[in-house]
Length: 145
Figure 1 (cartoon, helix red, strand yellow):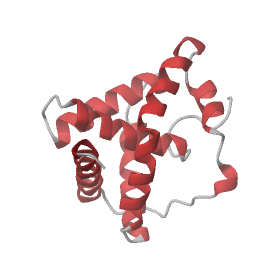
Figure 2 (cartoon, one colour; figure 1 turned 180 degrees about the vertical axis):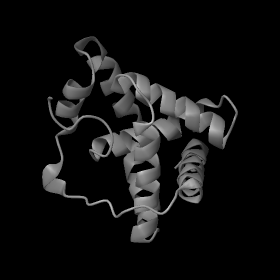
Figure 3 (tube, one colour; figure 1 turned 90 degrees about the vertical axis):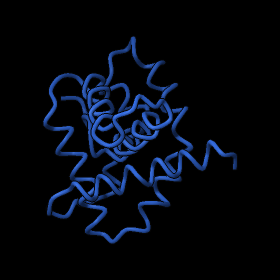
């Protein structure tokens, strides 16, 4: 593990802790793996065809961070996990537009809110967390409407 990996892990942990700190009491979020839509199917549902290659590349860039995110989140109590997830869902739902625009805007919002520095590594960590939530079917469309 290189020094960049330690920074990414620190960033992810810091962002998750900040999300928890800013979260409100919320209802339990049920998670049923059988409800999950395969990731590439979700991409097709949430992105225009011209964006598929770009978002697949972005996901390929951050997919290794999903394990880091899972390991960090495992250390939290169930109610804390729900608070973190609900915070992201609520912030996502406050935005309008297509998923691509909401993902970009939420990444920018969290970058300014939690760091207020234009740090590519930090932005990448935020995007990793948001794409992890997308992969978990917590944000974005789950099926064709």
